[in-house]
Length: 297
Image 1: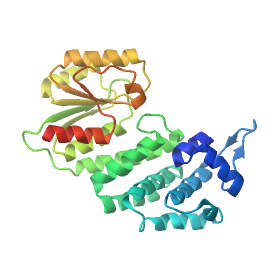
Image 2: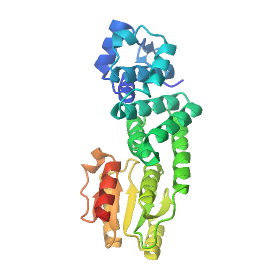
Image 3: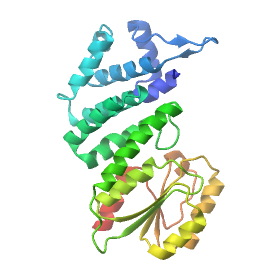
Image 4: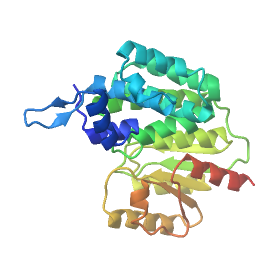
């Protein structure tokens, strides 16, 4: 059984901790469990149920009404929402349902919700507006997830499967297309963000050389000399000292002066670093799309 704090519940549901406590007291919407040391916590079932409750509240339902419903009725209302809500709410709805499927190890539910999103938005918008926000919300993109490792691996592998399949269905880039070299440094193995970039770049008719995880720096130099990319992108997810990261960026700057380097990391980490002139900070998908649009203008 997984164990979640009220802080975890706040992050996963989007409902403030003080509001959760108020609802518990006034409506008995949840009954926190207690550890032997009398520390309050929640289990998977409670978290999944509360994510559904948060969805209904965001869609305009009163908590006083929801509190009188049983689990089955709440689940049915959440499922029925898909046909009636606006696009802005629908994306949040899909994100939260996907998170619930991860918590529950429910692959069938994940596949169904993913397909529902593709049917409604198309595949590119699904990755931009549903999958990416989900990764940010649960912390998978920057390696600070609220999920237990098994849940993290479950949802990561499902998304990787989807991304690999989506990438395989794209046509090759046109002759003369610019080249992006995508890689993770030697200490990095969280590649969901890199795979997502690969898909978006390929979908925009770029040639992508994907090296993946833990690429030794000396190998990187060999590849660059051979393919001469126009852009390079890499992610910093694993915690390292700012001095080490700064030194890595300086080496990139010195060894590959003709190439535009794009680095992705948490916003907090980015604020502690000085980016060299030839580096671009890619904060999120919107930043990547802006760079693509500017490049093609």
